[in-house]
Image (spheres, rainbow, N blue to C red):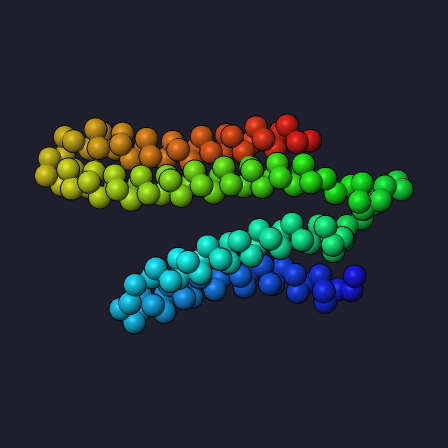
Length: 148
């Protein structure tokens, strides 16, 4: 596989991931609902996942094989799915943590502005939301540790 083709495949994946954000920003700026952009986001996510399965099957993945190992023997679908699971555990836990902090932090700021004595109590709820992301990171470290 030539060098230009090695750059085209990742660019396609990046473009598929950036299109929904551009669609959502355009619709929100126009004052419309971002629901079609959300549907577009799901479709592009499915496209990126499909591309993730097609690229290794089509043997487009290029890497240096050492000591006579073939590319087919070195690429493991099980390891790939393990890395995908690790990425999803971190990504989804961080999204959940962001939602929790987005709800808890403004309430904590409001409670602290009314009574400064509530700062520690309010901070505990924000920190509990951040714990979700740490659990996801821990799970991904355990998954990646068991792959190798």
